[in-house]
Amino acid sequence: MRDSGSRDRGSNPRGATSFLYHLSPNNPVEFRLPSLEERRRFYLKHFDYRRAVAFVKRHDDNPVFAVKLGANSGIYDPRFEEKIRRRVNVLFLGPLLERHSPRELGKVFARYAPEGVYYWRNRVREYALCRVCPHKRRRDYSKCFSCSNFRGQELAFDVDADVNGDLKGAARATDLIHDELPYREKVRVFSGRGFHVHVFDEEAYALDLEERKKLAKRFERYIDPWVTAGNATLIRLPYTLNGLSGTVVLPLPSTATEFCRQHCPENEEK
Image 1 (cartoon, rainbow, N blue to C red):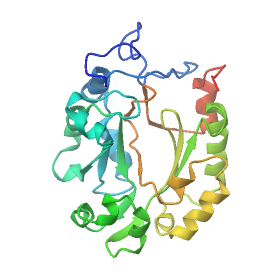
Image 2 (image 1 turned 135 degrees about the horizontal axis):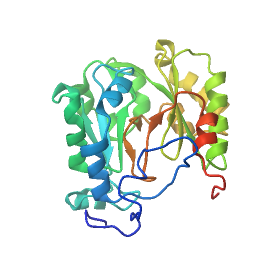
Image 3 (image 1 turned 180 degrees about the vertical axis):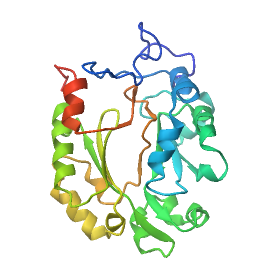
Image 4 (image 1 turned 90 degrees about the horizontal axis):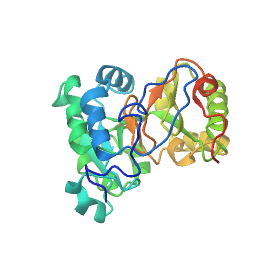
């Protein structure tokens, strides 16, 4: 367990925030684990809540948020020791914008100093019904597609660097997927360790499980098919911190290949 005083693997002699998101042309991405203190400071001082909310509202006017506490990095707030011990790493925070202003989101996330902040890709009519749904508690999200409360799921592709050899390979795969999809409202996002492709077309929300599985099969050599097939329902919220890499999740203004040309290390470790 790592508490707020841990600084060993997350230490950075160049300063606490230099690795976070200050990417400039020809400045390569640098991966490292941020400490709990740095994660908390990011949400209090550097989180761009305006852009984050504007992005997620393309998905849903009343989005549902979630956090991962830190089981993967081993860095988490001591208050969550019992949850981590019981293998509870994901906490659904619900539709936060019903209770908080966008400006307050950073303070809410800072309470958890999370390893990652996510939003739920499902659209539903009434989230309160989902909170008591046994299928949600068992994470059997395939049942959502036949529920009368369900309004669709955002189509997304998770393109990992590990699957594609390195970050440059993932960038090429991301652009290929983006260009081959027959949709108009598509966004490429640097996820902190790879790339995501988000699709906001209404017809994509209406895809059933079989149609999603076919897309997952089509691109399976490049992606985590579990995400595209509709079984994994969370995706990282842009403009938040990836606590496994120390980099910020950023929508891309152009291609992933162009992003990589400016920011990918010349000699990546495989």
